[in-house]
Image 1 (tube, rainbow, N blue to C red):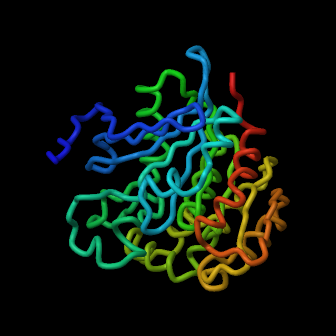
Image 2 (cartoon, rainbow, N blue to C red):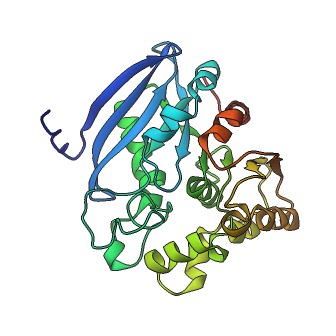
Amino acid sequence: MAAIPTPRPGELELLSKNKMFGGENLRLRHQSTTLGCPMTLSIYLPPSTPSSKIPVLYWLSGLTCTDENFIIKSGAQRAAAAHCIALVAPDTSPRGLNIEGESDSYDFGVGAGFYLNATNEKWKNWRMYDYVVKELPKVLSNYFARLDTSQASIFGHSMGGHGALTIYLKNTDKYKSVSAFAPIVNPINCPWGQKAFSNYLGPTKSDWEEYDATCLIKKNNNISTPILIDQGDDDKFLAEQLLPGNFEEACKAVGVPLNLRMQPGYDHSYFFIATFIDDHIAHHAKFLKST
């Protein structure tokens, strides 16, 4: 099979297309000017009329994932079709740059972009924050006239839950709502976050706080839209890495509405996500407008 050529800047290439619940799963590839490499993304377009404007729900995946994990494993398309919401799942980091050490561990580098803008020169291409917030909506708007990126919400899992929460809290004007599954909510105080932030951002811990949901919520006491978080109580990462209680306490301190649902017996897997995904899409549908 011949290799797929690198797309030129501004191009969006279709890699695959599959019909599902009357809509379509698309896998696409484009040259990212933000990250300096080709990036893949998966989209579910619900069935709609040609004149419809479809709101967008971004999904951010966790460590080691690509754009495909959510689309293949979550079963989210049925609810997205019912609510006429488009699902957009980007990849989790730049790929193919061959930076020394980029693939040495599962929790840093490739597959572990942490949805921030790295300031360490070595990792200058790791700018997933700008990619998700700035570049990706423009790419979508340029190619899909039916997508209304001004009506957008965001959610994610684990590292992606961290990304969804921090991106939302820093851009409440751009997203209507946020939710998360087993998010890393206080990364400055957990091993995953400390490893990533020290390498991407350097030793100054005040810089780390700009990508920590528990720190950011203290600056966002005017949020009235409820935040939904599902967390399995049998999640092996709960006590050391995820720390939902820290975020819950911070929300209570500033009066931000949080629905933290501890789910008995559930773990960190996509079996857990698939169980409660319909609730999350219904949550976002309340705040997104489909016309």
